[in-house]
Length: 227
Ligand SMILES: [Zn+2]
Image (cartoon, rainbow, N blue to C red; front, side, top):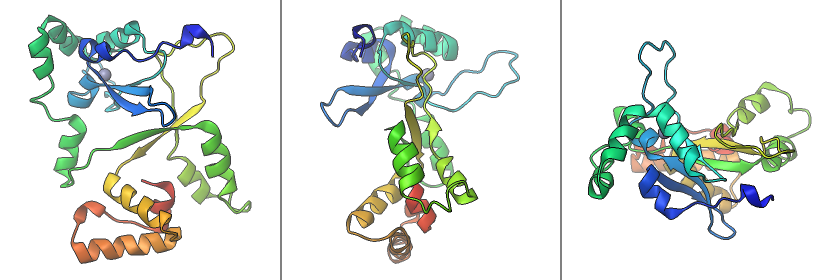
């Protein structure tokens, strides 16, 4: 890795640029991704006169964690909040997000489930080779089920990432876990050695017996794609 690219996450930036660590490396605990708190709590601001609907996507920053990357995003996506935030003193900055519920959480409340989506970044070879090929019957690859399942993995593009020469990007995929309760249960079941189909059955049974609506609906297909 070129030394220029290796700008690690700086903890003081959390406060200065309103970003929060969202993913750490399993290897050494270093920060892999940080999310924009303006996106989480307020959503992106719509431009006056803009016909395009704003995306509800949360901005995730990754290496290099450079201050100008944060600034660039805030100026473009959160001009008003960013202005207010910069004018706030330290104490006010700490409280800035406190009184606001995350946008996603309010949406979920609307549907009666207090769950917040989780996002994971997965290295491309795991998605392409292991999940996309090895787990499949060769005859089913290129079928519609395969296509549906693989569409859960979204090319992770970080538009603020500055590519060095020879770098192409596209080395990671992002997957959203819409139902973390169901997801963690599914992991338990699979670890215990159940098949996708058995896990789905136990999941439905658990929901019926416990009345836990948060578990949501489930099939072997949902177990397999994890969302
Ligand atoms: Zn943002």
